[in-house]
Image 1 (tube, helix red, strand yellow):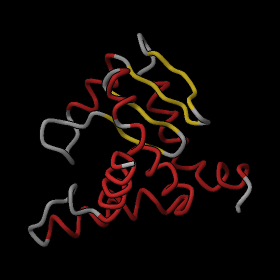
Image 2 (tube, one colour):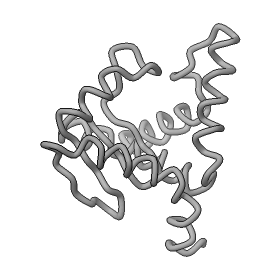
Image 3 (cartoon, helix red, strand yellow):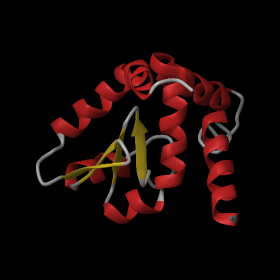
Length: 135
């Protein structure tokens, strides 16, 4: 088992991106830590997520390292299992996560496929989320 501190340090570059977004959009935001992950939602974050280029109609939530931003509290609660899979992915991939995720999406788009639903990172998150729901 990899020590928690090492996982946080390996994910730190991606987490820094998430923290920068939260700081920039913190006006009116609610920020809290849940199970070692900073979760935030607020008007500016909702606006940003509603314009996500990856999902039609926007995204309810997004993970950037140990930071999860959501459109509202319910979105954070409803997507928690899915987003925690992404947190673990960032802990595995570290600073390579964002380039790997974006490259996978770009490749799928160039192949005429769904850049979000067919992305390997999303498929894993949806699979684990489904398994959790069946328990």
